[in-house]
Amino acid sequence: METRATNSAPLKAGATSPQELYRLLNLHAAWLAEHRSGRRLDLSLRRLEGVDFSGADLRRSKFTGANLSSAILSGAVLRDADLYTTNFDGADLAGADFSSCDLRGSTLREATLNSAIFRDTDCRHGHLLTSTPTEGSGVRGRERGVDFTGSEMKAIDGRGASMQKCWLRRVNMHGSDMRGANLAEADLTGADLSGVDFRNADLTGANLTDACINGAFLAGARLADAMIDEARLSRADLTTQTSSVAASASISDLVTAHKKWMQSSGRVGTRLELYGTDLRGADLNGATLCAAILRRVDLSGADLAGALLQMADLSEAILAGARLEKAVLDGASLPRANLTRAVARGASFGQMQIPQRKSERVTGTWPTNLSGAKLGEADLSGANFRGANLMNADFGGAILTGAILLEAKTQRANFASAIGMPSRNPVGNPPTEVTPAAATAAKNN
Image (cartoon, rainbow, N blue to C red; front, top):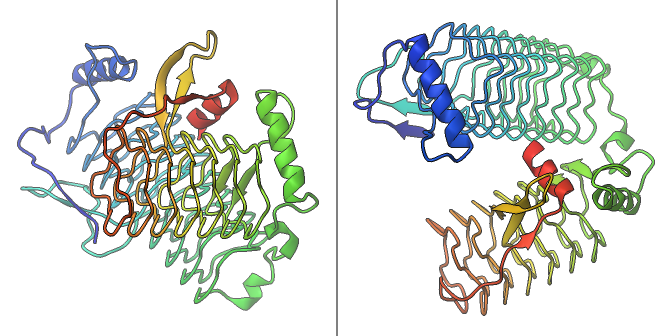
């Protein structure tokens, strides 16, 4: 069971005055702008019932164990926020952006979530350990995911969300986009799932008893052991062509359209966006796939040698045995990706430089994220991992002769039996520069 310990001594668990909140929000805004006077917003364990945060910029803030029941956060931006075991019961969260948030162990019963964004949000179970119990912390004493019971969730963007074992009883999810989401063992009893796009989603063992799935798109979804009425299933769209790469376009057509999108900074062409698609053995040698979205895509044995994948989203993608020689993946997102036995000699998993939109002057870097990735027995000879996030990654038995690990974050990474383990501080190559289109796409993910 996921647990988190916190020391409640330095945190004020009581109510917070409007004046204090205003001051803390200003400090957080300065912190986001990287001003020296700024400070990250940390309202862990605070009582914030009914507080109005509508439209607030709360990116990367921390609300661990806070009580935000009946609060107003409509339109708020909470991307990358720490919302572990937070209580949002009855809150107005319409249009809020929860992308990449940690929502483990939280409760959102009877909340309004219409048009909210949950892309890549972690909604699994969690338990907060404190020295004293906290009111509304969301702890239920059993290993279940986030509790959304009875919530209004119409037209949400839940692509790639991790909602294993979540309580979604009687939710209204009409018209939502849940492509590639993980809803294994979720409880969707009595939910309104009409028109929901579940293509390539994982509904293994999910409880869909009495759920309305009229017009839902289930092609490519995993439904093994799911509890679902056959009569209701007949009203869903199971057309096999909807689960393919595209109904009328080949992968080469999509790659061509994506290259036009990149070269024109989004003015023409179409961004490549796939979730859970089967591309095993695909020939993508030298393809331009910068900023493409390829979440949970199966690229086992695919040929990606020399491909340009800067800022691409390959979260949980399967690249086992794939060819990646001299491929450029600087700034790419590959958390929990499987690169077992991949051949990536001379590939670059380094940093991207992010230019300002107008002057294109470089203002920072964006590292490749390989946290939790599996790279066992991969050939990574001469690969560049400068500044990359390699935390919890598994390099067991990998070939790392001549690889660059300068400034890489390697906490809890496994290098057991790795061959040619390099020095952690060799002279590395400078980070490459990202295009404005890729930078904008990365910020919007």
